[in-house]
Length: 82
Image 1 (cartoon, helix red, strand yellow):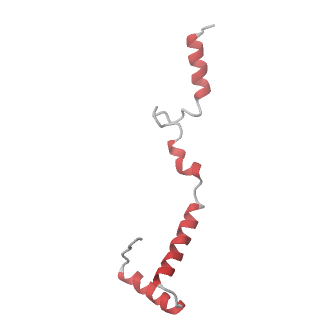
Image 2 (tube, helix red, strand yellow; image 1 turned 60 degrees about the horizontal axis):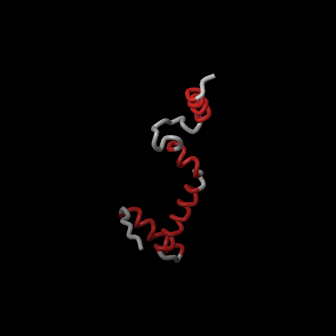
Image 3 (cartoon, helix red, strand yellow; image 1 turned 135 degrees about the vertical axis):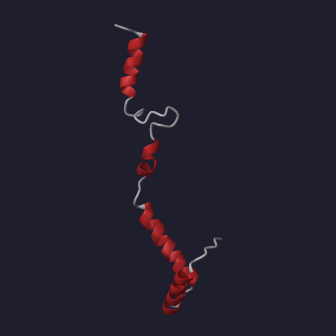
């Protein structure tokens, strides 16, 4: 259950639509929320939503996931110099 407070002018518009369409205010608001959620869910992929977090978790390095090969080579060369 969710309670939402609407500004008076918006509630009047919903009342008018409900009377015109012979539907309840709840039905109109549920449909509006479904449309909103659907349009915003398609806008962003999972990658888009987490992109700024990838490779930064504990190290703070923003390029950690893209520079791992170079870091690995450096570590191996330090351990086993030629």
